[in-house]
Image (cartoon, rainbow, N blue to C red; front, side, top):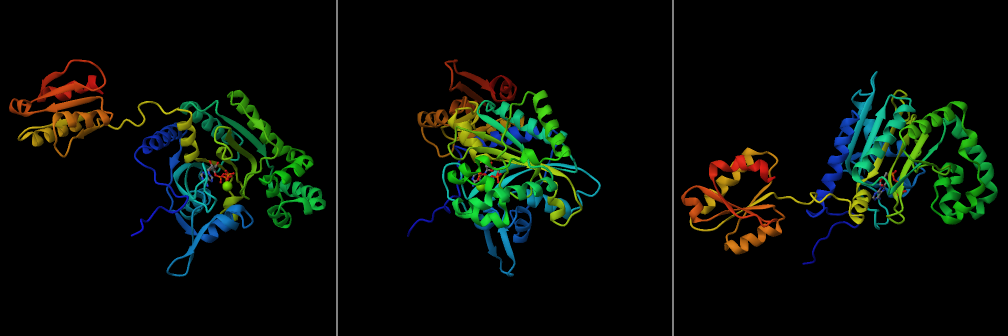
Amino acid sequence: MARIQAVRGMNDILPADTPAWRYLEDTSKQLFAQYGLEEIRTPIVESTDLFKRSIGEVTDIVEKEMYTFEDRNGDSLTLRPEGTASVVRACEEHGLLYNQTQRLFYTGPMFRHERPQKGRYRQFHQIGVECFGFNGPDVDAELIVMTYRLWQRLGLADQVRLQINSLGTAACRDTFRSALLEFLRPLKDQLDEDSQRRLDTNPLRILDSKNPHTQSLLADAPRFEDFLSEESKAHFDSLCRTLDAQAVPYEINPRLVRGLDYYCLTVFEWVTDALGAQGTVCAGGRYDGLVEQLGGKACPAVGFAMGIERLILLLQSLNLLPETVGNNVDIYIVAAGAGTEGYALEVAEALRAASPSIRVRLHHGGGSFKSQLKKADKSGAVHALIIGEGELADRRVTLKSLRSDAAQETLAFEALPGKLNGLI
Ligand code: ATP
Ligand code: MG
């Protein structure tokens, strides 16, 4: 029978790669805790309307990328293409925005029906942060500083560049939109197909077009900065000053609009040149209108999401994973000879009880000492514990270093937990 394969664009993450994933996730979570963030987990499936209403009907995601289906009740459901809408829904539903502020993070799979290629998949994973109830720009700045600290901890700081822009408030966007329309209307015939359609529905998105000819037409288009109110300008200036003070390098990119409808004021992206076309590893901004748009009481908000796959690709291709990442075993126990199996398990359990962080792999399936020691070596373990009939007879174990020439040593069973400190 033909073998069934994974769905195109949806990847297995195999044991060889999960340590890198955990390293990235753990490093992020440890950092987020330092900034006082709490975790939220929401379902992977939501009502289709949630994404239509939040992301915007005239966006790539809603127009062409969503995994939407009817469930057995005939309800239209969608696999989440991003995390923000779900977090807003959950916060509203549980009253988390009522007279309080929130600083939250989430992590998990997202689904978009895009053309799979390096750094672009149909199931991909994000780590995201959302803060509610703060007008900024102090919180905008702190979040960006936090992302910079993450790159520093991962050794990526000189591989990624920060681009920022301000979209202004809703009022600034309206005047800008009119000016942009006036500029683009005469050029309509020269625009790419998507952009022509968006002229009437969502002209700001044209700035985000990936079509090179459309981009070249935009060279003389009006710029956001000329339409910012004093208040919007002050917000942006303050953000820039804080980034300067924290020595976070940035570029102002007047073309940066972000793909989703709900952004205002601060928008930012961290991009790399090391991944080809899929260069954005982290993106976010302020979305003060979204909570109200989804039926809640107006509440300012700011957040970002980073793409785990792209960051892992970056860490792997630049060899930035610490050596310890990927090593899953500290001690490998080999046992051969009549009656030694039970004693080997007893030794393994004693070690595990003595230290919750120790990783002990117990050999299963028998075989000679020689073949077992080969497996021990392959496992990456630093030490092997050898148990033969002699060790069983007087309740001892033989400790052998697999990574140095140190002489073998035979110890009493009782002495083993005490020996651990020096071992791992
Ligand atoms: P792009 O311009 O690359 O399509 P986007 O603007 O659609 O990105 P966001 O919706 O802002 O992306 O998502 C935040 C991050 O999630 C991106 O910067 C990227 O790192 C990651 N990401 C988005 N879509 C995918 C995908 N299909 N596969 C892998 N990672 C993705
Ligand atoms: Mg996209």
